[in-house]
Amino acid sequence: MTDRIMALDLPQVDPLPEATQKYFDICEEKLGMVPNVLRAYAFDIDKLNAFTAMYNDLMLGDSGLSKLEREMIAVVVSSVNKCWYCLVAHGAAVRQLSGDPKLGEAMVMNFRAADLDARQSAMLHFAEKLTESPAKIEESDRQALRDAGFSDRDIFDIASTAGFYNMSNRVAAATDMQPNDAYHAQAR
Image (cartoon, rainbow, N blue to C red; front, top):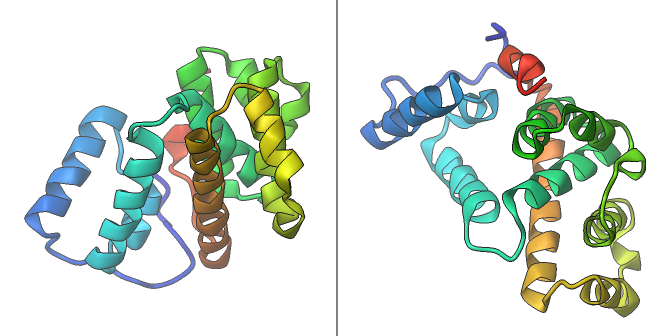
């Protein structure tokens, strides 16, 4: 793990509350690390809990979007925003979930270069537009998603996921949050 988590000097609560320590232990067991984004938020357990609750709901909760599709949204939003932390972390997740290192790299660099189906392409174009020009989203954008097979609930989930990563990207940029070194070698 890189020594520096972020540029701000916000020490982790010590000792961590039992539930937080258990969550970190599960991360260590399943991922082989505690993601630095969690360590960055661990200076304030309420903020950490709010962040993880939203992340877990959006990325792991019930949705018409697959886990891979949600990770693809994270990468496209992060690519537009040039978020170093999220491109590394979620690029690794796309590589792992897809079993295709080339897809993960294309998503990070330029999702248009990836071999995507019409559904994925429509979803990612929407996420990109929502990131770049949210005031320009209109009914035709939502209809394009419906035409690609997304329900209105799915559209809400796409928008919520894109919104979450826009927020996360800005916090990561403002704090110079660093990705865990382990992400770089995953699923290659």
